[in-house]
Every structure is written in structure tokens, then in C-alpha cells.
Image (cartoon, rainbow, N blue to C red):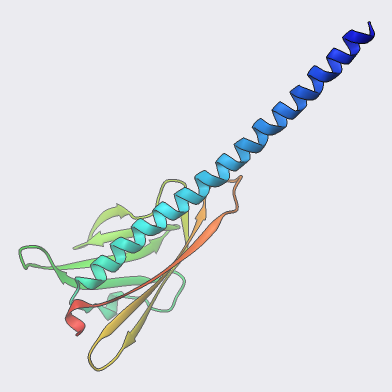
Length: 160
């Protein structure tokens, strides 16, 4: 009878350690998934915005909002054939929207991520115009509090 109690205690202890390990691995997996989602969405959004800024000739100041947490940037550019086009990045309902020639092309950050800050700042000299970008993302899952901020800058093609 004593052997049965000892074996039962050993099996019970092993079960507790196993369940604790599985729960710990599940939490770590959720954190890694949140980190990867933030990193992937942030890098894709920043790459697209800096690319469009670099290939743009000027900023449409009437349709842009600088130095605000819900920024908006409207750019004058041209397509591959040389036809003029407008490209706009804006924050609406915690999503980063891309609009080309007044057509909503969709969001640049999705997949369980919400945008908390989109800030554009412009620095201009007599020879060039630089746009700085600040993009803050937060994991949308209720179990995670992970957030990340990305910074970038690009000089407009037509500004040098």
C-alpha cells in the first residue's frame, strides 16, 4: 500500500511538472507569435512607405497632416509609364491605409496588429526634402501587451 502511495505521488509530481511546462511553452509561443507579427507588419509598412516617398516628386500639403499621431501623407508621384498619380498613407480606425489615385488599396498592417501612432515629420532644406516616419504598432490579441515602434526616413526624389 505504501508503494502505491509513493508511485502515485511520483506520477502526480511528474504530471504537475509536465502541465506547467506545457503552459509555459504556450505562453512563450504566444509572445513569439506577437513579436513576429509586430516585426513583420512594421517592416513591410515601413518599407512600402519609404519606397513611395523616395519615388515621389513632391508632397501634396493640402491633403497631408504632419506632426500628429494620426498622420496623413499625400504624395505626388508617377507610375511606370510616367503618368501622374497620387499616393496617400493615412491612419483610420487603427489601420494603416494605402490609397492610390483615390482608390483604397487596403491596409499595410494587419494580421492581429493595430496601429496606435502614424506620425510624419518633414525637414526641408534649399536642396532637399526629407520625410521622417514614426509607426507604432500594438498586438491586437487580448492576452498580449506587446508593442513596437518603428522609425524611418526618406528623401523625395524630386527634392534634390
